Image 1 (cartoon, rainbow, N blue to C red):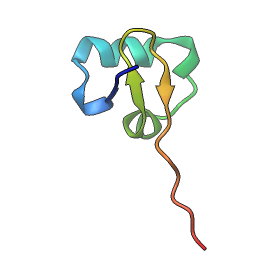
Image 2 (image 1 turned 30 degrees about the vertical axis):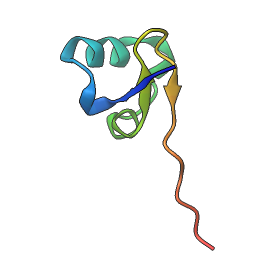
Image 3 (image 1 turned 45 degrees about the horizontal axis):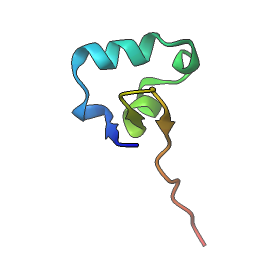
Image 4 (image 1 turned 45 degrees about the vertical axis):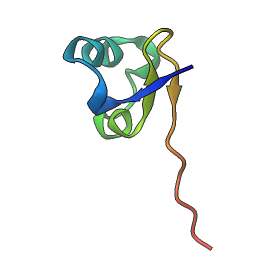
Amino acid sequence: MKVRQWADLTEDQQYLISALPNFEDMTMSELRKSRFCTKCWFRKEVAQETYA
């Protein structure tokens, strides 16, 4: 599965993602930090920073 960052998506793809019910409760900053598969719209979260 090849995933793309938000900035690498076309405007149409970005619109589609923002309109999907699975992502409607997410903020735009959360969407911009995520990566997406353009075939199935799977969202891969960016690893959170951990502090020791």
